[in-house]
Image (tube, rainbow, N blue to C red; front, top):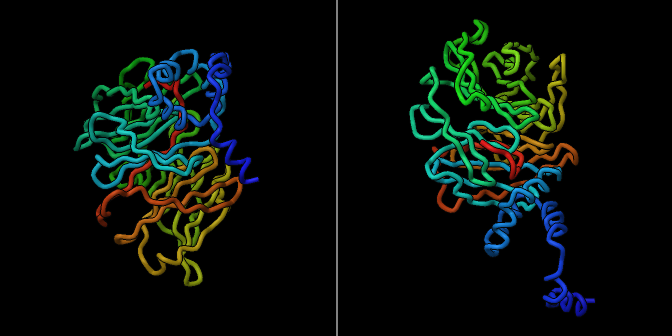
Amino acid sequence: MRKSSTVHLTEVMKPQIWEKFPEDLFENVLARLPIVTIIRFRAVCQQWNNLISSQSFSQFCAQVSQENPCFYTTFGDYDYEAMYDPYMKRWYYPNTLEFSAFPVSSAGGLVYFQYECFNTNLCVCNPMTKSFKKLPNGWIKRWCHLGMTMNGSADYRVLKLGCRKYEIYDSVTKCWSHLGKIPECIKGPGCIISTSISIDNTLYFMHKHQNIVSYDTSTGVWTQHLIQAPLHSSGLTLAVSDGKIMLVGILEENDATFVCIWEALKMTFTLKEVDRKSLLKFHRRPVGLTCVGNKGLLLCCLKSCNMYRMIIYNIATREWLTVQLPFRRKVFKQHLVRATAFQPCLTAMP
C-alpha cells in the first residue's frame, strides 16, 4: 500500500491531457477552494494571476458560499499584522496596506481600519484584493467608537461615535451625514466599553453598566437592552456568530477561572450559557480578553502580564482549539492585540 501511494504522489501530470482541460470548468473548480488559498495561487504564474483577477472568476466565487471566516489581527505597533485562516490553521502576513493601521470593525468581506494617530484617519479595505479607500473627514474630529454595517446590495455604512454626537458615512453618497445627538442614557466618555458588532443594519455595543446598546443605521433608532450580567464575571465583550449576539467574558467560580460564552437570546436578551473552558495557567491572575467571531467561530485572545494565549471555539462542534501565536519576535507585555473577523470575498468593493 505504501508503494502504490508513493507512486501516486510522484506521478507526473501529462500535459497532453491537462492542457485541454476546459477553462470554464477550471474556474468553477478553483472557485470552490478557500479564498485565502486562491489568493496564494496568484504567485504561480501570470496566467493564473490574470485568471484569478478576472471578472468572470469573481462571479464564480460570488456564487460559492464560503463557510470559514478569517481573523485579521495587529499586535503592539501596528506594523505587525497577521491574518489567521481557521480552515488551513495557518497564519499569513499580508502587508495589506501601504501604511500602519489597525482594524476596528468589519462587515462582510470588508475591514474598517484606523490609521495614523489621534483618531483622525479612516479607511475601508478588502484584505483579499488589497483594494482600499480612504474615507473623507467628517464633522466629528475625535471619536470614541466606530462601527460598520453592510446591506444585501454590498453597500455599507460606517458609524462614528463621539462623546456627545454621532455621524454616518454612506458608501452610496460617499459622504458623512445624519449628524445627531447621542441619547442621554449612553452619553458620556467611557459609557461604551467594547468594540461594535454588526447584524444586518444594526450595530451593538457593550455599555459600562453591563447593558447592550444598539443603533439601527437604516432607521436611526437607538435602543438600550437590559441584561442580567452573570455573577463573578468580568471583561465582558460582544461577538457575533451566524447572526447571533454572543457575550464572552472571564468567570471566577469555585476558586477556578474560566473563559465563558453566553448567547443573548433575541427579543428578551436573556443570557444562555453556551460553554466554558478552564484557564489553569491564568489562575489567580487578572486576565484581559478580546473576542471576535463570524460564521460559528469565536477567536478569544487572552493576555495576563506577558502571557498570551489564543483559542478558537467552534459553536457547532463545541470544540476549543488552541491557536499557535504568530509572533516572530519577542512579545512585550505592553503589546495590544486588535482583531476583527471578516468573510473572505473577492467581489467586495470598498
